[in-house]
Length: 337
Image (tube, rainbow, N blue to C red):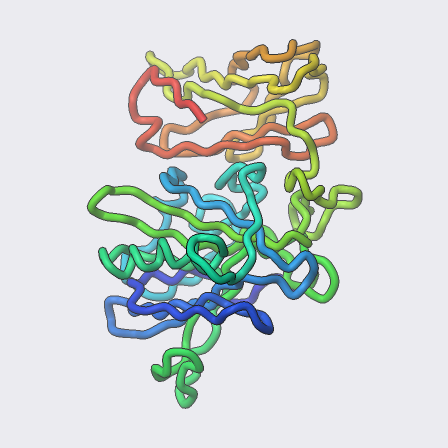
């Protein structure tokens, strides 16, 4: 069944602990909220299923409408409903990042800047020094009133784990599958008014899952060279979500054929945040060419932030982007992705 206690921890980081590369290591973070409550975030850095090295992506300038849905900085634990339009994460449906940007890193190696613990250390140590607002999204454990935390010793033991993708699992972990219940680490740097996001996934997880159960769709297991499971010949590269003039406005989305051959657009669709679909015009799009698609037929791009998803003729996601209310505020501006 899906995660039982899914939510977000809003706190500041005060310490961290690396566990090396034995057994099933984690990168441990000690956090404290504005009320003085202590928490531990246990972040996986190695998979129990082969291949053991995790997939990761860091978005150094994370711009997404979900940041406006997060609770106040330092507010502690907040339960989340696993549904769109909230701070709940979904690596597939939320258009949080480009899966093609995912890379692998070993958990812990001698030397500097060559493993996943080093990468996490870079951002967590920055968060401790600033201090920055830190958000850990995942599943809560505790509180355990009579049991001290096993790593940092505070009482009661209390924290968050499953700070990674939580769908498309296999084997005994398949029971954890669900949609809009993925984990992540988000850091807000107030001096720069900038968000940094770190997302982790296991190489054994699939990147096309059922919209209800989060289970892997048949025949869509990932390939090592392409986590999305396909070559993604088309990409969304720009959109005008707030055109000049009164409603109804002429919203547009620009699609690029990145492949070396024409692509027949018959059966391809765009989908907005509410999953309203807009068919692309049938016919070939030449290699390297762009197509400006005009909105309509229920397909709408709201000015308060949203997402745009590109679906192939079988209905599988090929590419997706998101934009914030700030990006949509200026009339007539073309947002590039």
